[in-house]
Image (tube, rainbow, N blue to C red; front, side, top):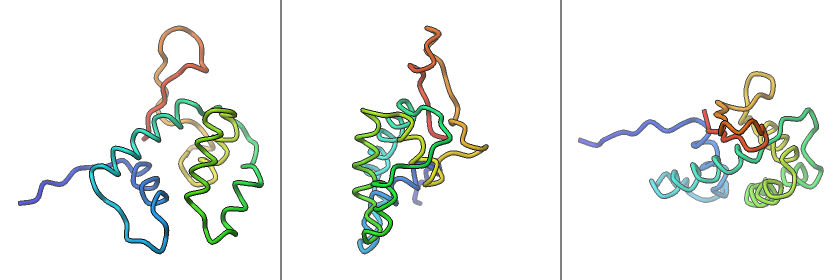
Length: 120
């Protein structure tokens, strides 16, 4: 009998976005681990904001739904601007409750910018 694993919705969403819409979905365990790692990095870098995603990110929707470019841009924002990253992820539906971050666990050093954020 096949063993089923429960996978977080955010993980499934990112794994889906990582696959070009004209290709078969990749539901391998390796892809799920990759999505987990990326989400952890993204959530750690996010800074809550009310701003909209950058135009270059939104233009990906008109560029044949270029999700690969969206993810590349989010990796750039992870390193350069946590507010842009948050705006992009919120636009894609990764955050609920009016834009809050999922389960925030503090390192205990009092620096909110160094918090660890885990997918819900």
